[in-house]
Image 1 (cartoon, rainbow, N blue to C red):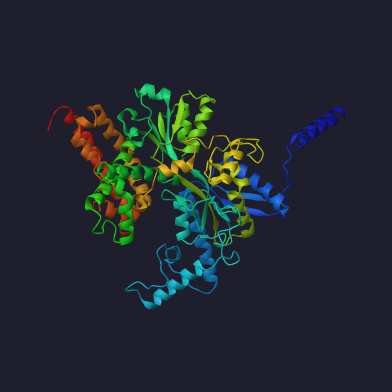
Image 2 (spheres, rainbow, N blue to C red):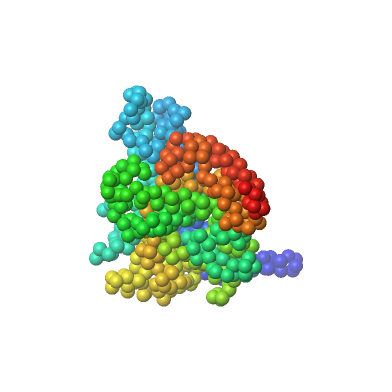
Length: 590
């Protein structure tokens, strides 16, 4: 009997311990009937934890009840895009059929069509068919009521501006507020100072259907110990450095078809090569003037107004091709392509990879962890000066959000000072994160140095609490954005095609690529093997030659899977050719 009582007392003590030592949350516990928010996101666990906790506290203080955030974390942006389109098509189809309408085999393509114009019937289309398509399209695009149809998700948190813009064009997103309804103090101060710009240096940070919440750059992380082992002394501070043959078999890279952020980084590399080719051709000072004239002329892609020299466009196209070939050589040096962008800096920190591409917050965080806070530790990260854009991770309201008002409040929280503190404050600071130092860049202007006295005062107030000095040249993203001007005309139209090209060029034919590159290195390097390099770096010729103008429309004129297959077959063949040519050239054979 005494033994049983003792056991019960021990059990009671164990059960009571979490309650005795729990931290006060500052809000009453969530219970059924309190607000719920359903959010889909590629964000990691630390971000999900801090923003769920922070929003619940903020909501309780402002509206009297905590919020349970139901996170849907199904993978990267590509997986999210497929999931959302599937859910919306299924929900709309059930509703449409329930209204007494027949479902068409091409129904999904109609309602998600990004270029459909309900005001203009395409030439040659049957009038009756046009009216049926138009009715279906408008029914989807004009309905924003969860009682009619819904994905059962409220907000899309994270990804990039490209993904948000794509979802908006498919009709999946709706504005959280009208232009004149945005809550005061979110995008501008009472005196009119801009807090969240619509964009900088060619990048979109805010649009009617999405709002940037945090900013990021792309860069290179490396391991000094592994560098020494590879015989590399100069740190890789420019993208071209990663094409050095001495990195062969040591780079960690993420798959751009699985990570929208890394796909954007790859596009950035091509963009930089365009800029360098234009500068090398002597047109650097005229870029703004020429691009403005091209935009005003509204001519088909590749055609120029009379007062823009043809050599300027030729330089852009040459830089674009150089960028594709640079991506190929970086891919040839890869040890692997991973589905997870966060794996690369982890491996670099542990020495499993010598260097790799990284999103800034992954690279900086892992360098701090791996080095134990020491500046002379093995791992380092840097954003190439003038070599990376500053992109925004947005928040968007989904069509037919079942908890619309709570979703709008979540967006308001993210854009407020309270929400922005979670990105950059130290753990335990007032208003900061509870468990995880997120070490990401807030988007609001009042966290960075400014000539505006009110913004500067806010910046100084925040500076005492942030994990990083956001006023430092390498941390002030507003300064970094000013140093890099993104020209959408040069590369934006190839974002999707670029993902598939890298897959065919570096992943699906990766074994053959590494064998060919290894043979060239063994033969003495690119300078000794010009014919092998020419074979290696030949751009796709099937189903037609891939050029800057052709690439803009290729995905519309050819089936995507057919392109992937044909490109992969060609690359495997030319890599085999390069592998045979390299030893012949080393031996001096013609």
